[in-house]
Image (cartoon, rainbow, N blue to C red):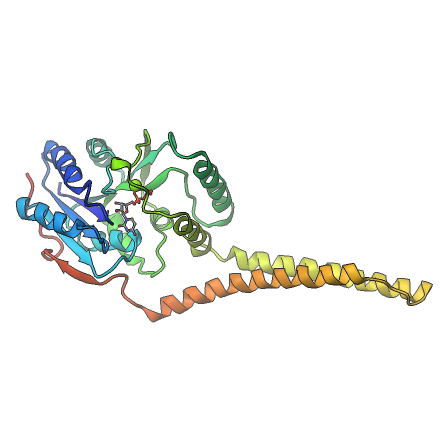
Length: 316
Ligand code: UDP
Ligand code: MG
């Protein structure tokens, strides 16, 4: 069985050589033919040079470099598109995904699972981040149409047919966690101990990026926020009508003196705010439609040493 390892890299020059060494050792140990595809996502720290050097020394290495930073989703997509293996493993370059697990993944795959998912514990993560993540997953599982699990990321093995399924989803705004769940197939999850980032480097995800990613997840897989807008709107209209009736009745029975300054201001600002939020929600969806209709490519390639997909040259 041929295996392809897809590794998105963004500013990973410090660890990439060590990563390659560790991963090659594991892959050689499996005695299966393999290729490693490094996707340089527009790094600015010499990652590409490091990758080119690795590729020069190791015929199993393919690489592809983007013209700028397009994001991890695009990098993974590029890797999957060019993967020639019967199974593909997606792996981070920062050694947070332990290479030792490759063997285990393969083993589970041969037992017939199309997706073998490594789930990390949150041991050692900052408490705030853990709490935010928990809340987020609780929320998204109530709202979105696909089920997502905390700690389940992109570290997984995907069979050929599952990869082909993923590649049929051509949306521009990619939310992998959701896409992986959407394609289905037999999946199995196993846990591993959380590993902190190598070399003390910071996660490439800023809080803002994470927040936007979270929003993507909520909006990519359903239109429930729009539904919510309709319900809230109906509720408020009902309240307003009842209130108006009450005001009229009071005015008719007790005269027209109706001091309502506070009510008025509260209603105006409250409703104004609500309308802004709802407009924002609608705008989000329209924005998505706008981006999708442009049909822009997910990324642009600056350079690569790729052979056509399906050809594996290196490895055991
Ligand atoms: N990455 C990428 N493009 C980006 C951000 C990250 O290709 O814009 C890569 C990064 O090099 C790493 C993986 O995606 O291999 C995960 O990134 P990171 O470790 O920063 O995320 P975390 O582990 O915090 O989820
Ligand atoms: Mg990481």
